[in-house]
Amino acid sequence: MLDRRTLLGTGVFAFPSMVPVVSFALQPGGSKEDDEKWYWYPGHLLTIKAVGDDTGHTCTWMLNENSPREGVPFHKHLNEDESFYVIDGLYEITVGDKTITGGPGTYFYGPRDVPHRWTNMGTSRGRILNVFAPSGIERYFLSVAIPLKTREEKPRVDLAAFQSRTAALREKFGIIRTGPLKFPAQ
Image 1 (cartoon, rainbow, N blue to C red):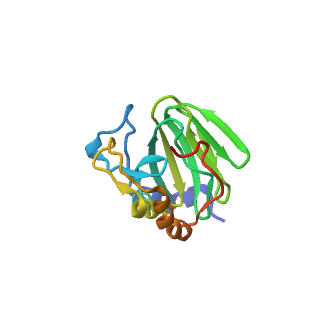
Image 2: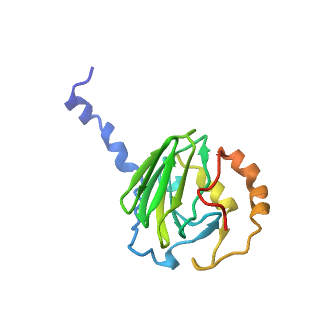
Image 3: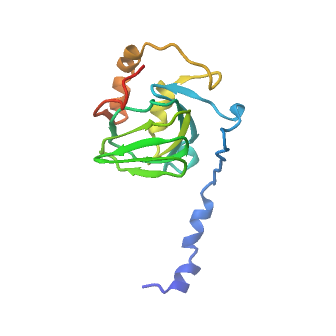
């Protein structure tokens, strides 16, 4: 068995410094629009902050923005754990049978295979950061979400047709709907 000095001398701990480092800033009130590509997806706008290629395929970082009473329906991921971190606004986050409501700085963890949903419960637009581990789910969102020219753009979408068109891809990526939205779609 190697003692600590011998182990440290082998350079085993040098490996992490070889992993590329990616950084970004979540600026109060939003990032510069020309620095990000925003997409529409039912219940929210999103921008991908980091993909698997940026993180050694360990995780995907996605920033979501939505209006009051908007969010996602109950669903589960077969392939990823998901963390939730509130940036702006007031969100209700349910994972399994536990629900929390909180503002900026609120964190909640959702393991894979456990139904969850999040909803903006505030009176103004909010932002929530989702981190998925491992990465890969960004391929789903980038293939089905609708690119926007500006964050203010509101695409006209037949929601039933969109859900029908994306059902097979949700299944392929292990995203399983398990229940309703908090509030019916408007």
